[in-house]
Length: 134
Image (cartoon, one colour):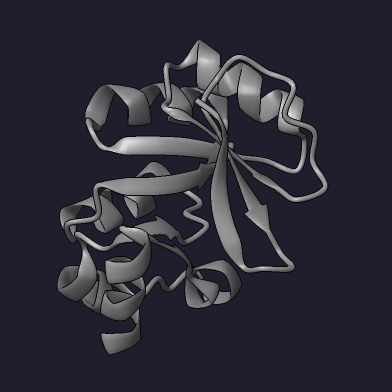
Protein backbone atom coordinates (compact mmCIF):
# COMPACT_ATOMS: atom_id res chain seq x y z
CA UNK A 1 0.00 0.00 0.00
CA UNK A 2 2.87 2.38 0.75
CA UNK A 3 4.28 1.83 -2.74
CA UNK A 4 0.93 2.74 -4.30
CA UNK A 5 0.76 5.94 -2.25
CA UNK A 6 4.34 6.80 -3.21
CA UNK A 7 3.62 6.27 -6.91
CA UNK A 8 0.41 8.29 -6.63
CA UNK A 9 2.35 11.24 -5.19
CA UNK A 10 4.65 11.12 -8.20
CA UNK A 11 2.13 10.40 -10.95
CA UNK A 12 -1.23 11.46 -9.50
CA UNK A 13 -2.82 8.07 -10.05
CA UNK A 14 -1.66 4.46 -10.31
CA UNK A 15 -2.98 2.12 -13.00
CA UNK A 16 -3.30 -1.20 -11.18
CA UNK A 17 -3.63 -4.41 -13.14
CA UNK A 18 -5.09 -6.86 -10.65
CA UNK A 19 -3.67 -10.28 -11.49
CA UNK A 20 -5.84 -12.00 -8.86
CA UNK A 21 -8.87 -10.57 -10.62
CA UNK A 22 -7.51 -11.68 -13.98
CA UNK A 23 -6.40 -15.19 -13.05
CA UNK A 24 -8.99 -16.20 -10.45
CA UNK A 25 -11.80 -13.61 -10.70
CA UNK A 26 -10.93 -12.57 -7.13
CA UNK A 27 -10.04 -8.86 -7.25
CA UNK A 28 -8.31 -7.28 -4.25
CA UNK A 29 -11.40 -5.49 -2.95
CA UNK A 30 -9.93 -4.94 0.54
CA UNK A 31 -6.92 -3.16 -0.98
CA UNK A 32 -9.22 -0.95 -3.07
CA UNK A 33 -10.96 0.25 0.09
CA UNK A 34 -7.61 1.53 1.37
CA UNK A 35 -6.23 3.10 -1.81
CA UNK A 36 -9.39 3.92 -3.75
CA UNK A 37 -8.52 7.54 -4.48
CA UNK A 38 -5.08 6.60 -5.79
CA UNK A 39 -5.86 3.80 -8.24
CA UNK A 40 -7.35 3.23 -11.63
CA UNK A 41 -8.27 -0.46 -11.49
CA UNK A 42 -8.03 -3.04 -14.25
CA UNK A 43 -9.26 -6.20 -12.49
CA UNK A 44 -10.68 -7.92 -15.58
CA UNK A 45 -14.28 -7.94 -14.30
CA UNK A 46 -16.35 -10.52 -16.13
CA UNK A 47 -19.87 -9.45 -15.17
CA UNK A 48 -21.76 -6.29 -14.21
CA UNK A 49 -21.81 -7.51 -10.60
CA UNK A 50 -17.99 -7.71 -10.60
CA UNK A 51 -17.80 -4.09 -11.73
CA UNK A 52 -20.27 -3.03 -9.06
CA UNK A 53 -18.19 -4.80 -6.37
CA UNK A 54 -15.19 -2.71 -7.41
CA UNK A 55 -17.19 0.53 -7.46
CA UNK A 56 -18.83 -0.17 -4.08
CA UNK A 57 -15.31 -0.43 -2.65
CA UNK A 58 -14.63 3.16 -3.66
CA UNK A 59 -12.87 2.91 -7.00
CA UNK A 60 -13.90 5.79 -9.24
CA UNK A 61 -11.96 4.90 -12.39
CA UNK A 62 -11.75 1.44 -13.85
CA UNK A 63 -11.11 -0.51 -17.01
CA UNK A 64 -13.63 -3.06 -18.20
CA UNK A 65 -12.94 -5.63 -20.88
CA UNK A 66 -15.66 -5.51 -23.53
CA UNK A 67 -18.67 -7.60 -22.45
CA UNK A 68 -21.90 -8.53 -24.18
CA UNK A 69 -23.88 -5.53 -25.39
CA UNK A 70 -26.69 -6.02 -22.86
CA UNK A 71 -24.16 -5.94 -20.01
CA UNK A 72 -22.46 -2.81 -21.34
CA UNK A 73 -25.80 -1.02 -21.59
CA UNK A 74 -26.72 -2.06 -18.05
CA UNK A 75 -23.32 -0.99 -16.75
CA UNK A 76 -23.53 2.45 -18.35
CA UNK A 77 -27.02 2.98 -16.94
CA UNK A 78 -25.97 1.95 -13.41
CA UNK A 79 -22.61 3.69 -13.03
CA UNK A 80 -21.35 7.24 -12.91
CA UNK A 81 -17.72 6.18 -12.46
CA UNK A 82 -15.09 6.78 -15.14
CA UNK A 83 -15.16 3.58 -17.18
CA UNK A 84 -12.74 2.80 -19.98
CA UNK A 85 -13.05 -0.22 -22.26
CA UNK A 86 -10.34 -2.63 -23.25
CA UNK A 87 -10.39 -5.42 -25.83
CA UNK A 88 -7.97 -7.47 -27.89
CA UNK A 89 -9.72 -5.87 -30.87
CA UNK A 90 -9.03 -2.14 -30.48
CA UNK A 91 -11.58 -1.15 -33.12
CA UNK A 92 -14.30 -3.05 -31.25
CA UNK A 93 -13.35 -1.32 -27.98
CA UNK A 94 -13.58 2.09 -29.66
CA UNK A 95 -16.90 1.20 -31.28
CA UNK A 96 -18.39 0.05 -27.97
CA UNK A 97 -17.00 3.04 -26.06
CA UNK A 98 -18.73 5.39 -28.49
CA UNK A 99 -21.93 3.38 -28.68
CA UNK A 100 -22.40 3.14 -24.90
CA UNK A 101 -20.87 6.54 -24.01
CA UNK A 102 -17.96 5.22 -21.95
CA UNK A 103 -15.10 7.55 -21.12
CA UNK A 104 -12.58 6.03 -23.53
CA UNK A 105 -10.41 3.01 -24.21
CA UNK A 106 -7.20 1.48 -22.91
CA UNK A 107 -4.89 -0.15 -25.46
CA UNK A 108 -1.71 -2.16 -25.17
CA UNK A 109 1.46 -0.80 -26.71
CA UNK A 110 1.07 -2.76 -29.99
CA UNK A 111 -2.54 -1.77 -30.66
CA UNK A 112 -3.54 0.97 -33.11
CA UNK A 113 -5.34 4.02 -31.71
CA UNK A 114 -6.69 5.84 -34.76
CA UNK A 115 -10.01 6.82 -33.22
CA UNK A 116 -12.09 9.63 -31.81
CA UNK A 117 -12.43 8.61 -28.15
CA UNK A 118 -10.11 9.31 -25.24
CA UNK A 119 -7.34 6.72 -25.42
CA UNK A 120 -4.75 5.56 -22.92
CA UNK A 121 -1.96 3.18 -23.85
CA UNK A 122 -0.12 0.71 -21.63
CA UNK A 123 3.59 0.82 -22.44
CA UNK A 124 4.73 -2.63 -21.35
CA UNK A 125 8.43 -1.73 -21.57
CA UNK A 126 8.31 1.24 -19.19
CA UNK A 127 5.27 -0.05 -17.24
CA UNK A 128 3.55 3.32 -17.63
CA UNK A 129 0.07 4.20 -18.88
CA UNK A 130 -0.07 7.37 -20.97
CA UNK A 131 -2.90 9.31 -22.55
CA UNK A 132 -2.42 9.30 -26.31
CA UNK A 133 -5.73 10.92 -27.36
CA UNK A 134 -7.88 13.30 -25.36
